[in-house]
Amino acid sequence: MMKSLKLAALAVGISCAMPALAVDLTAISFGGASKVAQTKAFYDPFEKATGHKVLGGEYNGEMARVKAMVDTRSVSWNLVEVESPELARGCDEGLFEELDPSLAGNADDFIEGAIQPCGVGFFVWSTVLAYNADKLASAPQGWVDFWDVNKYPGKRGLRKGAKYTLEFALMADGVPVKDVYKVLATKEGQDRAFRKLDELKPHIQWWEAGAQPPQYLVSGDVVMSSAYNGRIAAVQDESNLQVVWNGGIYDFDSWAIPRGAKNIELAKEFLSFTLTPEAQKTFAENIAYGPANKHAIDLLSPERVSLMPTAPENIANQVAIDVTFWADYGEQLEQRFNAWAAR
Image (tube, rainbow, N blue to C red):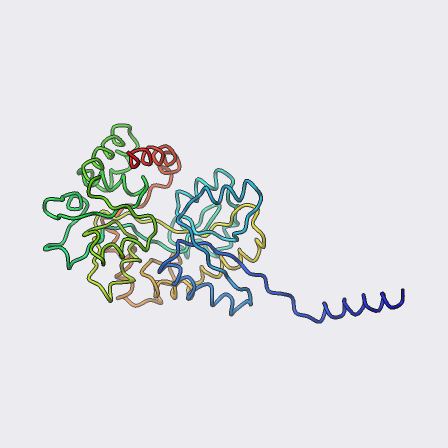
């Protein structure tokens, strides 16, 4: 009995003398050049500052994966990067933890719309028209040219989904940027968008991951593509890929915490860390996305800012994604799109 007590006391003494094991966080992003920038700006500095390693995973925005984890109470992700419509819909459906807005700090320091009930936007990006200037005799000016296969022969790349694709189809059909969502909210407007897509369907090469459009453009598989602006900027030093800002759609990507995730307080600490001006500056220096924290802009060179969707001259004829529209219509339009694409 005395021996076992001594052993127990020794075990307690050893455990008290050992430092607490650092807990790892799993952060899921869209991968590619954006994940590389996140590693440099967020993951590595956070580990250096706190001792907690951030494990970076990837997905293509499949909310079904988040829902399955939450529904089965087997959440293995601590944070997930989501686009604004998915953040709003996931919040409504109880897939994400509600967050205290003070996590971000002073709301006035952030671009309007960044702070939401279940997440915080940490950068602004655009889906734009991109093209390979080595493959075209003249530069396209917008989505009307994107649809013109006689003037610009060759395959086109489009994201395989209703979101962005339907808006671009309406712009190609002559709908002004500012009226796109008003038209798309009608049955006639939706039919019009799908009819316009019918025209281009034989010439479309679909993409799903953000890394694919620059690959398709560099290889010559497509002559033009919708693309995330930062993915194009990331390869412009070694290619002649160009961006047309006219008719782009901009949005936030936000961090959200799946409901039932482990180590929520640490996840919140990481989230706050990524929103600091210095972290935001480093991120924007590594990929051409606009910082959500306005103070980070002051830390960047004018040349770097000019590559971002938030630069005044770039944002002038773009449209903000309509989060309410996609929260209301997203499910039915994605189903219709999938059925159309499968035909």
